[in-house]
Amino acid sequence: MGVTVHYTLRLKDDRSLSPLIAHIRKFAAARDWPVRDISEQSTRLDRSTDSEDTEYVGPSSGIEVLPDERCDPLRFESDASRCTP
Image (tube, rainbow, N blue to C red; front, top):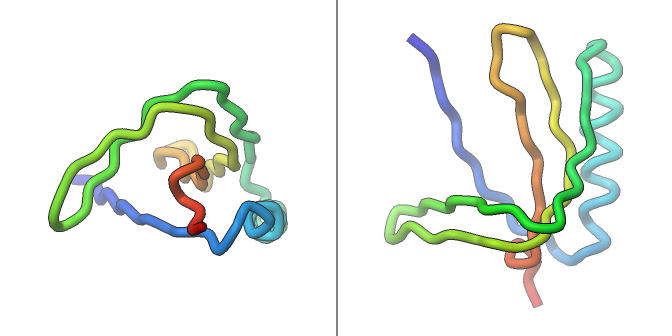
């Protein structure tokens, strides 16, 4: 049996993504975990909260980390709707 964890993060602004990715990259490198940059011109992301399900379609960027070959990748992905005005 596997465990799935879903998380949502709202960035303070567009400038917050780069330091977050740098921190994740450093954390992964210290553990010798492979990483892959995410840069999509158009992607579809499903969102779920306690009150509703939504879908985002558009550009995204971030980083994907693979802690172990038996694990699904950890995706830290930002899209235009994740930043507060």
